[in-house]
Length: 523
Ligand code: KIV
Ligand code: ZN
Image (cartoon, rainbow, N blue to C red):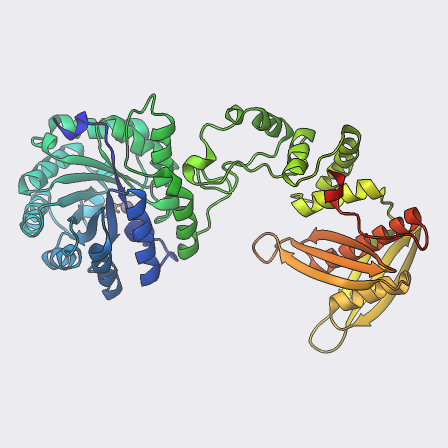
């Protein structure tokens, strides 16, 4: 039986070699060990741990990963030069399952670099692969830039590599140039025509320059390749390599038309994806397949409604299968009533139809002003509908001047009962100055019991959520607001809390048994 007859596809992960090679993605020694351990635990068949001749650090990392890894074959990369191959062997030999991966560029452009004729290159391949095979019985050989190499020459050198002892023949699409039909045709041609092809495993190694790495890899597998080379999150040079999570989940979800198996525990995908993003410093784009923040998030009302009735309406795989706790239904301006009711239920709040109607109107107004409506916002809306909050005080404009040279100065314009007023105040920092200006326009004795700032999103343009709790005459009210400007969010939260105090005082009357009304009382 040849490899092609089985439906088991080997997963060869090169996050620590081709991935780490991408500019800016360098990992520390400890980080490489951690990622290798996670790859080993998730069931990767072969880990390409580094390029031992490249640096002392790479050598140490490959050697230590080789010593520690429990299940995977540990592979190191080497150019077609004897000292490279020796160094690679030194690094991988402590593995229980070592592999040497040696390569040379075979396309016309790559042959021109070492200035070798076709015959001279063929001789070099024979010499280096034999040398590697004398050291290690598991040898992978790659004709770099295979997809731009003359097919006839490719067949010739692959035959030489097989005869010299290569056990895996990898076909790299080094510059991401091929397309699915061609990728399949090339693999098929090699398997059908190269003598000895049935004794080796054919691998596919694709780059994503035209966004076709996943499709090209799967097409190669359909044509008979039985090893996919890939990286977590598609990390890699330029547009990256084939993403491990994409090919693995594609074969799992569409096993009906791609009946191939891997040894990957897909529930470990999310965790390793996050760790690779953190240690490489390459954040995953929100809409990245499988591992993007939005890959299992639904905001539109129609989608949320469908998801709540039957998750299969808009999801082709279960979030749990990739290691997520569940689907995310973030609330935003596209969300509908069903999603709002589900969110309230999740927060422990049961509301009747009339109250839901009221909350929904306020929610839509808020969602028009904010990108994402958070749990605390929803709870504040619930309290507002109970209180029948009116907005006596409204922030119109705020300007703050601050620096290192002296006190901050805030100029505030506020509408009070429909009439505009303005005031300027100095303070110990911009928030203090702004709160003083609010008190100048609306004198009150409310004590600031709590002032908290959280960054909700990442980056310097992050949304800051500010919570303010005020107490006055035994009455407590909270305000919460989010804005990319922390001072603006602070003033809005402060004004919201003041409005709530005013509303409650009006409702309860002076001397009433005032207390904070919590959303939990609504149930
Ligand atoms: O893309 C490529 O050609 C490579 C080889 C070294 C296999 O990464
Ligand atoms: Zn590559």
